[in-house]
Image (cartoon, rainbow, N blue to C red; front, side):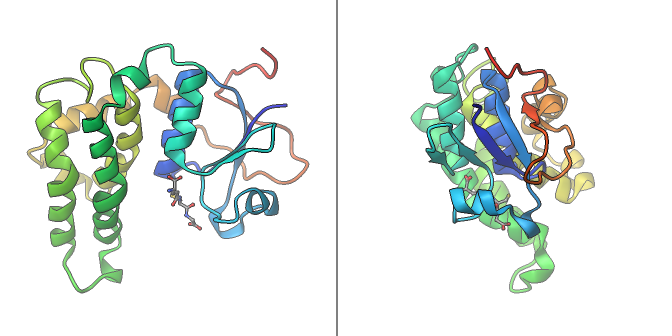
Length: 219
Ligand SMILES: N[C@@H](CCC(=O)N[C@@H](CS)C(=O)NCC(=O)O)C(=O)O
């Protein structure tokens, strides 16, 4: 029996979980979810109803994306993502990403729903709490923990991807050269390609979709 991953292709939390599972080479049965029509089996496993959710064969449920990343990399971590990418400084950046940055990103992205401030003001907040700190580190090293990527890079990148896409013309002309280079490397990576395949929504009784692509059901 494989662990089951309830996932949504474009969700940044689900993307970070898939990046870690793929990097670790840990096989799961992927169940693509439509957020407006969540499967009863997923809600039974995790009533909070957020993706990603990982349900282990033991019945244990991991419903936080960072916990799924750490679970996968604790099993197999061929390139040392945990050792390189989980320092206190990087944890602080990931915390800023999931907190203040995500808050500002949602409002920058859907500024019309938050007329109390302009899109520009939300974007300034997002830059101050994450993009600037990223830029100062990535001006020194290719990735957050050195020349090779680690956990924090994979945890943070999907959110920067979303930020960059809100106003792509602004992003490509922005002064965040090192962060853009880092973002572009991740966008073009084999790992992202493997994580972004499109899958039809899962229905009870559907054939198993193995993830990462090419994974073997039995070791
Ligand atoms: N803290 C959670 C957050 C996950 C989350 O908020 N995912 C969003 C999708 S990007 C979600 O499922 N939202 C519920 C919904 O849209 O119904 C984690 O790290 O996994």
